[in-house]
View 1 (cartoon, one colour):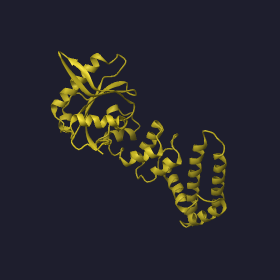
View 2: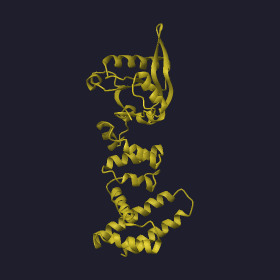
View 3: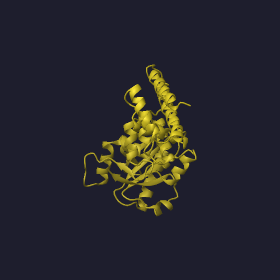
Length: 294
């Protein structure tokens, strides 16, 4: 086999396809890089590592820019990544995969590929979420579910810690201030909780007996079809926090929840959680997560 001619033809055909506007262009572009990576891998085994330098010079001379050694090595790495079990995502471009090439864990890579497919995120957004160590902030049990293709629950996808953007650089943090910081970028906060969240209200009033109480944040999740009560604490988790949010959740279930909706979920966002308190909490709809201002 003439590996060089095969590789050159792959690139030429890909450039021709790019000029024809259709939805398969991106898929073909990835297939080209995969095929080139495969050919480079096979050629390397037969002729040695130096063959990439030789092909790079010839391709640049005949086809122009874009065929440097770094790019050719990336195509080979892309091919090997797919061989190890990484998926070809429907919504990912080559620029997405370039960000993923630096990761060393196939399960982590597939998590971000699924993220790009389900949420249709840009390359820059993907880069930001990798940098925030989103995958690493999932629990081990959640990672196990994802690896085994088991459907995770809503609470499985809540990160720990939850990263909250302190855009206005508040230094003295009370519960009111923490709530305001979250409201300043509510989209980012809901993203930290997972997918499908909608904001309903902050300081949502509920009347219990003759007294009014106020839920810090009331959300709804359209994917799991349930209300979500979020309580904010700037201290370590205490057992009374569990009792408080449980009362709020029960109130929402009795007064807002419709028959076709699932029971309300509770998330306590605190300075430091307490695994022992959560361990002995009988209501598994409640979780606690640390927050970290960034």
